[in-house]
Amino acid sequence: MAEVKAGRAATAALLAQLAADLGASLLDAVSAADMDEAVIVAAGLLPAVDAVRANGFNLLLDIGATDHHPLTPRFEISYHFLALPEDAVAGSIPSSGVVPARFRLRVFPDDRDPVVPSLCGRWPNADWPEREVYDLFGVRFDGHPDLRRILMPDDWEGYPLRKDYPLRGLNRRFNPGGLPGPVPPVVTK
Amino acid sequence: MSATDLSIFENERDLTAQPGDERDTLVLSMGPQHPSTHGVLRVMLRLDGETVVTADPEIGFLHTGIEKQAENLFWQQAVTVVDRADYLAPLSNSLCYVLAAEKLLGIQNIPPRAQVLRVMFAELTRIASHLVQLGTHAMDLGAQSIFMYAFEMRERILEIMEFVTGARMHQSWFRIGGLAIDVPKGFLDKMDDFIGRFPERLSDIRAILEKNIIIMDRLIGVGKMTAHEAVEWGMTGPILRASGVAYDVRKAFPYSGYETYDFDICTRTSGDSYARFVVRLDEMYEAWRIIKQAREKFPDGPVTIDDRKILPPPKTEIQHSMEALIHHFKLVSSGFNVPEGHIYQAVESPRGELGMYVTSAGGNKPWRVRWRPPSFYNLQALRKLAPGNLVADVVAIIGSLDPVFGEVDR
Image 1 (cartoon, helix red, strand yellow):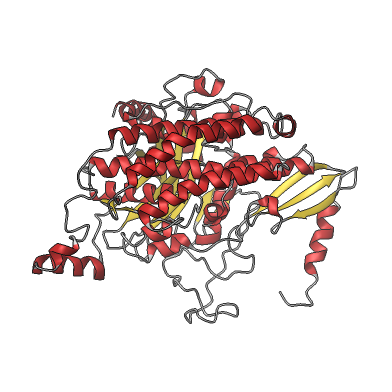
Image 2 (cartoon, helix red, strand yellow):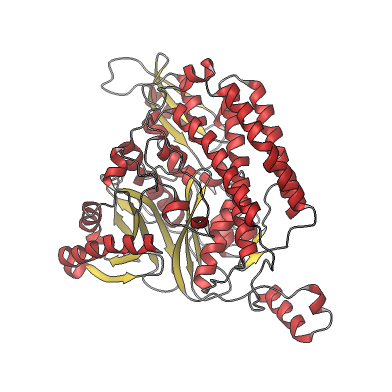
């Protein structure tokens, strides 16, 4: 797979820069099977993202979350980036298509107060996925301009994709078939 | 909210009178039942006369918790729920999921017949999905008959799907380790018939629509997006290619043997709704080319890997072999375990880069299946594309973005 190797060369420089820029904020740098990835602390996210962007990763593919409960730290926020070569974006279209690279950042925020800096100032498309993570996991994004629920109703109680949230929901006024359970704590904005 | 709670009206009044606004604006709630919103989208439009000042899409009306359900099913069972996300291209979803699970399991020896059939059906799905987009988009613009032409063509594809998998939609035909069943007798005749007829039908539609003065009038210059903006907003698929960036997952990160097929990436440079419309027309032709090549190389052989720990043995073997019966019982009652790990797998769905970030904790159920739904990101850009256009153009822009709400809301 020549494409994958070319992509890996692009991320090697990025990993070196992340190690230099972040220092102790960089917890781990892994060359995983699908793409290179870096594990960083939440406070180091914005400098890391700036380094990612400076290395040509111009498209924010996805922001997602995973709940590792009962393990700690339980929340993982994963950022996927794609590097489209600048000449391809500028309009010169290679007939064989562009050879891009992908990169992943993983952040494990604090369990008691899960909060991560928002990327809305860097990419406009970070808005909705961050709202979705807030909606379904209750992780806050510091600096998000409009952090409110997106998929669930505005008055929903609890964060459905957390592992301690039952599949059929909690027994509430609109959900008599759900399991009995305590009212989950509300994450304030 | 109780019946006497009138706070919703107060909110609306607040929205209309923006402090500091010189002109009066009107807030119009478009949808969620509006036919041109393709299902269940509500757009809060703030209008100055007939010009859109801001457009704020509201989503979530079709949220069914597919990601939560996938976490509560065995690895193999989850194929049936991932199909439900993008209901116009179900096989793209399950292809992405089974590829991710196969990578986590380390399965690399998918038989060639299964690979070819996967590609063939993924491309059939692409044509069917683009035909729905084309028909409904044209109907939004006032061309009623194209809808019938497009759906008649799609019907031929759904007939093949039903013939092979037993279901018109939500086929759930791909399995971790291959396919659910082999194609029945007479499949190749049906494919030959389809391959022979399709180009003519497509050129009919092209002839009616491509240089149609009404279509050109309604779409050219509407919802323009430069390449840099498209990258900035995370657009993928036909929308990114219509802005001039030749990025296609099938070429950039090939899967299922796409590197062995000869096809072109269709691009346009103007980046407006018309360019997206033409890119989709071109893509249908390229998909047909891929199907034709898949038909030519169609190999013999099995359609599943020979691994009793992943897929159950054939029925004939169960009837006389105790070991086969035990394997079957284990797979049905407790599934199989997948080694710990996480992986990002992407496929080129008809709407763009469909990614899945799958995490396994080593158990018999996926720990987490995170979608990267292309429609979700594409629709988000409506906030960028709609302002400055007329209300009628918002309908054209939504149609050209081609959102599928099963996938946006999951």
